[in-house]
Length: 427
Image (cartoon, rainbow, N blue to C red; front, side, top):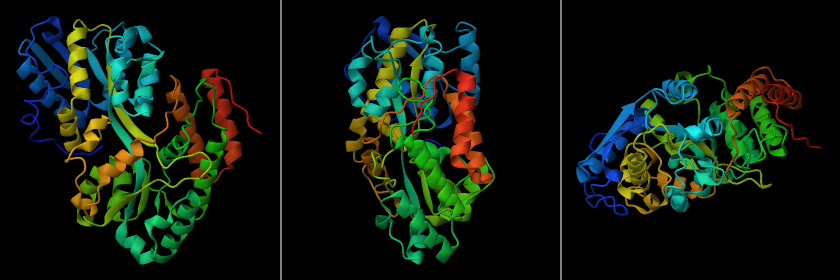
């Protein structure tokens, strides 16, 4: 996500009104204390919202605790195994990790749907609300999203005589990627990470598992995605930097990558690592295959869950309801580099402004078009194991030039051995 600090955030929030939250109350719903965990960029807008909330409700004390993402998950896992010891009232959690915690420890989390949040689910895109449901109820508060699109270098495309409008399908992406490489020596994107495979699966509403929890690595969508990526790799249009975030950022900064399918949060990273390229970037929709996929997929995204060990569930619920459904608080989060999934934000002046770094293209508005088309995917509580096996499979295909079907078969059997889940078979 966008690696910047939020500076002036509280002043615009003090006068906010959201469904009665701004009314002075002294009931238990607006008094006492609560503690919410979150990591880096999410902390400033949370603190700003907490300050505004406490200004209106002086008997409430909202504490926002910053915890590193990896450390947060370790503490959460340890706390859940210790029956809630050391855990906060609520915590930020990524969409892909929701199942891994809530479905394994359902009694440790609060069904916020029965507290009233089920009625608010339609304020968010369907894929997002679906990511925080358990047994048809909302068990979380949707927040940040990661609609994916292609970030491209205008000057390189122009030099190669390629227009973004020519790239409608992944076959087009391969075709024009070869032209760009031949004429400029530049790569389309990095093939070192399996994130692009997930993006392509998401275009079909697919993941490692289907809606029944069966292993679905051999689905037609999965096979097509991997074979296309192998074609790109064999054609030499994918770069292979060292694995890891920092090498990836250096690859972008060097100018090697000129057509990057990625979550919209990459916008801030590009501005940070390649400031001299201002005005030379643009975005266009993800290519499709045209057989049921859409030019939309999510990469990243998060929300909040409440812990049953909380001694002040009502206050915790009211604050997170306020934070996630108040337009101004989400506009503030957006200004801090996050992409709200609250639909009413997309109609604001701030959201629809042009982005100077991207030659005043309305990047965020383009992201809003994408997010409305994203299909829900099914993660399951075994997503961690699925990801581990897929990383090995992907590495074998892209680096060792292994056969796609052979590696898929190996990964599928390994995942079955680790999870005991059934394998979907296809002709």
